[in-house]
Amino acid sequence: MTQGPGNLQTIESHILELQSLHPGASGDFTGLLNDITLAARIIGREVTKAGLVDILGATGEKNVQGEVVQKLDDYANGVFMNCLGRRGQVCILGSEEMADPVYVPVSQGSGRYVVIFDPLDGSSNIDANVSVGTIFGIWKRRSERTHVGEQDLLQPGRDLVAAGYIVYGSSTMFVYSAGHGVHGFTLDPGIGEFLLSHEDIKTPFNGHVYSVNEGYAGHWPPEVRQVVETLKTGRPGRDGGMSGRYIGSLVADFHRNLLYGGTYLYPPTGSMPRGKLRLTCEAAPLAFIAEQAGGYASDGQGPILDITPTDLHMRVPLYIGSREDVLWIEKCLSESCGKL
Ligand code: P6P
Image 1 (cartoon, rainbow, N blue to C red):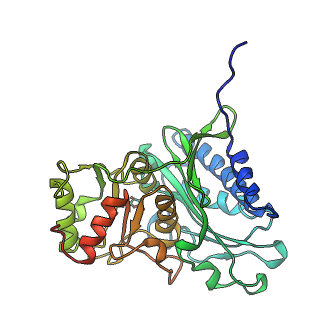
Image 2 (tube, rainbow, N blue to C red):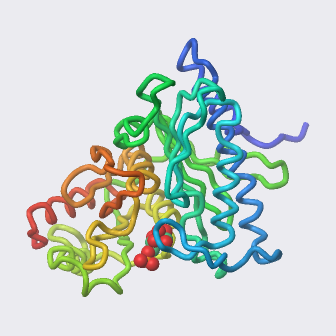
């Protein structure tokens, strides 16, 4: 008898197994995660055929960050807004593409969760067929359903109940954690299912890659320049320097570094004193993933996960990836030494 395919586990069954860890669970969390996988499949379908249909190029509009919005950004944001919370699990939706959060009316359900997402990060690369990604974070509502407000929206990453990203590249991968390790699923477009391909991802303790836009080196604080130079030439006790790998697409750089080891850096510059990346929809969800996989994420002074946002679009410097490397960077920057 011919052998069928090996151990095929769909993301839906993986999420259901999670639910079994929480006896008496309402199923809201399971439904919400499945809604996100649906949004991922719809966005992935459009991203992978972007070159074939007239959705390339920018809308000409600018988003709240002042960045030119690519048509697919708009589309991806709309998909998330339409797919999430259809069954009332969500009380607030926040998006990198929307200036203000959307508060879901009480009448539309239990509203147990808050979801903040970057629907299509790295979208300026779309026309060049470079990998792009979606990032999401899920928090629990803190206040009574009838009193939802900023205290529910602006929570530290330490309080995330789940986070993940989808990378639309040579294949479409869905990587997430609900606090029980990090697991990766690869989309089989033939059956439209995400199948478990990377169970319990652990990122290497240190790496040989650093990812940063060195075009800004002249605008970094001197201690950052010193740290990056040391990464390149080789830290004391390390065999040689690191290699530079920078795609210009955070999810793609992060994903490669997560699997192979490495560190992504987006330091502050003169024009961006808090860096470029957003805490709630980029840094915190990826920091949650990094720490669940044994890595670490810092703003240069301390853990990203311990920062409570002051507003939905708050930016933070980001140093994220292999634990030992990021801890070394943090030690140097917090002591402004850079010469260890
Ligand atoms: P820069 C894309 O706009 C993004 O948010 C990340 O995906 C990427 O790592 C970074 O910004 C690229 O920024 O300033 O190097 O072009």
